[in-house]
Each structure stands twice: as structure tokens, then as C-alpha cells.
Length: 218
Image (cartoon, rainbow, N blue to C red; front, side, top):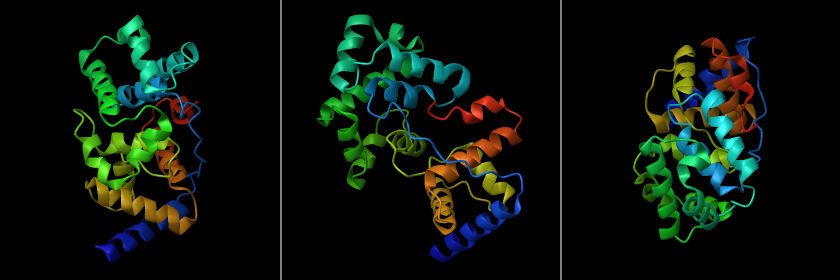
């Protein structure tokens, strides 16, 4: 498996280096990595929704309108005072319940700040407990780590499609992540940057709104 991973990683590097339209774009640091309310709004809403038109405006609104909501307790107090629906401008119960579940998860594990959350998630023994939150999977886990400015990759359909273009056919999340991370290491670039570069490339390739491709954490 290790040799196959390295072979596929080198194949991916060759594909990137031979594609003149592929641009390596440095990944930005998330400006709200210390703001629990904005973080939780982002990771819960982003799954399955248009980031540019639906998610980003709500995340920005929470970040700008509630600058004091930097901790889980402060976010929970705000919810009790104003109601989650009005804070994030969302009524669908599925995503609202995921935020409630995430807050309860943090309370149960004595997590109050983003740094405490980051420390908890970076302990491999804790990953499974996070994934037990209904509706959260490997991508959400890695996406949250990216928002917390960890150098990692969150595999989504864009990355799977990009590997298909490179002639690497796999739908296994962990293997795909390992291949892309190894490719980044071989190219001596950050894993966050190769993730964002692939995402942007595929967004343009699929003729999506080009502004969305440059909206990362803006």
C-alpha cells in the first residue's frame, strides 16, 4: 500500500506539473479561527450548500455582528438569548440540531475555546468521538482542522474528480488524502495550498462562479 501511495503521489505530481493551466495558490489562514460561533456556523452549513452565496455571508455576519462569541459558552449564551435561527439566519432543523449537538459535544469534553478544540481534535484517540456526532464525517473533521489553521487536506468531490483526471481512480477517503498529502510533500508545498489549488482548479473546470474559487476564508 505504501509503494502504491508513493507511485500515485508521483503520478499526481507529474500531472500537476505538466498541466499549464494548474496554478498553485497559497492557502489563506482563517481569520475567524478563534471565533467559535463563526467556526461552528461554517462547518455545519458548508456541507451540501453553495459556499459563496449561502454559507460565506452567514459566517461573515456572525463573525462581524457577534465579535464577543469566541467561546462555546459565549455562543451558547447568545443562542439562549437570541435564538440560533436568528443568529445564523437558518431554519432547517437538521443543521440547527448539528450545531446544538456540537455545542453539547464540547461541553461534554470540557472544550470552550478554539485552541482547546484544536488540541482535542489533534489527539488521534479523540477523532472517533467527534465522528460520532450525527452528520459529521471525515471531511467535516478535516475541514474543521483547516479552519483551525492545521496543515491538512479535506477531501471532497473536487479532489476525487481531480485524481480521476490524473488517472488515479479511488473513492477511498483516507487513501486519497494520503496520496494528495504525499504529493504536496514531494512538491515541497503546504498541504493546505495543494488542497485549495485543486479546489480552485476544479471549480473553474466545472464552470462554477469564479469568485467562489477565491472566497476561502475571506
